[in-house]
Length: 197
Image 1 (tube, rainbow, N blue to C red):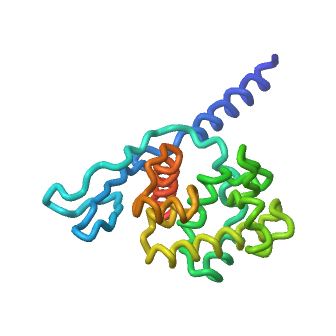
Image 2: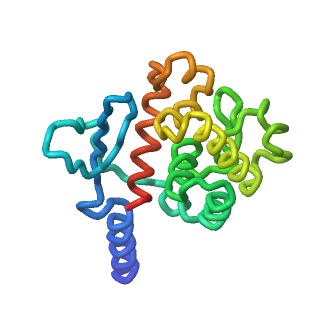
Image 3: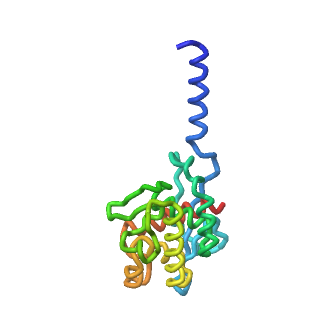
């Protein structure tokens, strides 16, 4: 290897290291407070001097291998967010948690596309091609908005319903005690605060 080639390799390795690791101070823990009505409140900056807010999720620093793809669908997410009245950072967080921005994603249970829509919901949500990003994002945003209204604007319950189904949330009247669903809600909220700030 010539001296010039060695220099180029060193530069490329240096660039890769800079890209791979997030900037310090970009992390944020998430805190939860349940009020007297049983409503859960989440924040990454608790302001209460009393200890009402408890640590819900500790942010851990780790590389994000798909960061370079996360902006690809922003224009479609923006359009669907405006059309269905769902906050852009929230919609993007759901997509990140569901498929990690992979439009060809298929779950073990058969959910498809960016927002992991189940086949039995395709007709109801007007999906002809679940792998088409525009159709999938619009359908997912529409479905989430329906859940959000059904659960009276309670974000955690709406997210739990998106993952476990609304009947499970109705049965338990809270986030169902399923490890997958509890972890899903935590992940979406983590990404939501990340994209929001």
